[in-house]
Image (cartoon, rainbow, N blue to C red; front, side):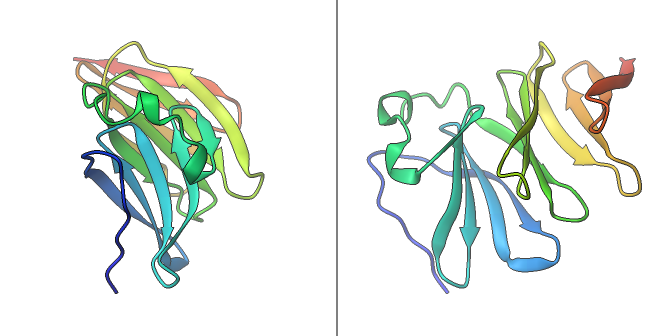
Length: 150
C-alpha cells in the first residue's frame, strides 16, 4: 500500500519505528518537528505530535512548520510492549507518550541535541544519546539513574 498526504510545504521522514505487537502501526518523525503514528492498513494517521503536544493533524500550528528544519525530530523509540513512544530532536527536549493513557507521562530536557533514543528490553529504562553523553532514565521513577560523559 502507498500512503500519501498533501502538505503545505516540504517535509521528510527522519526516523521510523514499528509498534511491537501491531506491525500495521508505524511511528514516523519528520524534519519539521512533527511525529505521526500511521495505521498502514487504513492509511490514516492515528496520532500526531508537535513538540511536547498531541494534536489533531488538521490543528497542528502550520505557522511553526515547514521552514523550521533547523529543529527536526532526530530519534524515536517504542517500548518493547508497544505502550510507550519517546521522541526527541536537536532541541534536547525528550518526551514519552503513553498510548494506554493517551497522554504524556514524561517530558524533560537534556541540554544537548539528541542523536538516539532506546528503551530497555527488560526494565522500564530509556537511554538518551547526545553529542557528548549517554543518559539513562528510569521511566517509572521519572528520574535520571546514570550518565556517561565522553
